[in-house]
Image (cartoon, rainbow, N blue to C red; front, side, top):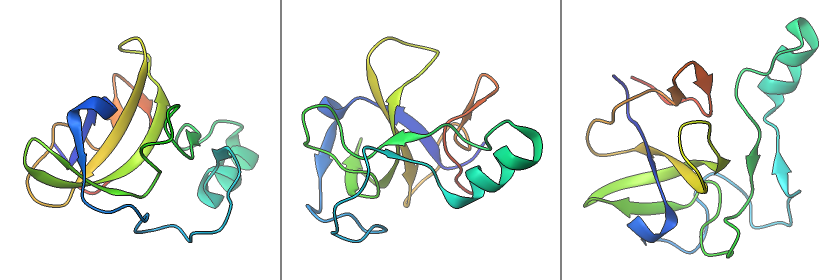
Length: 114
């Protein structure tokens, strides 16, 4: 199944104001991992969809540690999804098992290990 889940920001509790995997420097509004750029050049289809750097209200950042349903998680994707309306956050659970690996209904939003 994997360690991935999707949630909306209202369902999260922040456990750290500073992102864990990103420097505190100013970043672009859309982040495209280097692996995505390399893959896109090869087959013109990105490995994962680009993510926003922060939620629309600025309360959650990409790479930030949060709590979801009592489980420690890291925000790996922020943006729109094809399975529901509104802004969603893709989470990699650090404690526990999720329901997917970042790929939902054939759309690769983010990557996380099984």
